[in-house]
Image 1: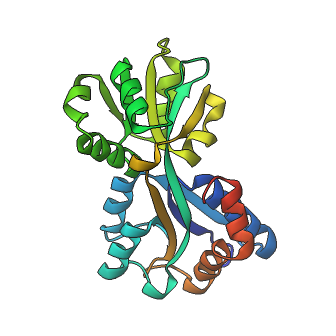
Image 2 (image 1 turned 90 degrees about the vertical axis):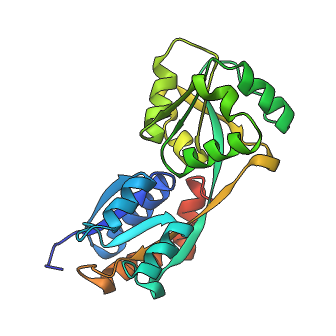
Length: 234
């Protein structure tokens, strides 16, 4: 890495705030500049499978990181878990909040909603699988909208006049976009909820593996974990 070159961070949206806060703290402590690039799981997978992923450090779901590590695009000895992220429910401010206390009350609220909205990333993929497992996929098909990102879900909820729409996303992403006019109702009921482990790793093609590794190490340090917990990563 040339002097003054930035560490390139490619990260999923879910732990976005924690990743950014860690990178800024690391930059303050070391003077090392960085560049962040946020992407959904499908885009990360496509980039990691290309000849040029354009990144030095990756933050992604552990299951994906293990796949990349096995395939040789991530250094196996650099992979560490940073924490877990929970899938939650979001509505626009002022809208009726669904009852999430039980699977039964959740199901009733979902079936009564005008529209169900989630994204193509890992949280949305889980929500689609969850609806299929509890027998709601076909019943909700005509009212389901799948968007490109977590932000798009919150933006749609905020912009539309309906107060009877229910959105889904990672709790961290929902909280990050409160300024749009939406808010977190809570996590999914325990019986159908999921906590996704996220991890950090250094790409095999990193321009400066030592510096990239130092940043990855900071993310899993006591201070790094504190910053992630503050952002909603458990």
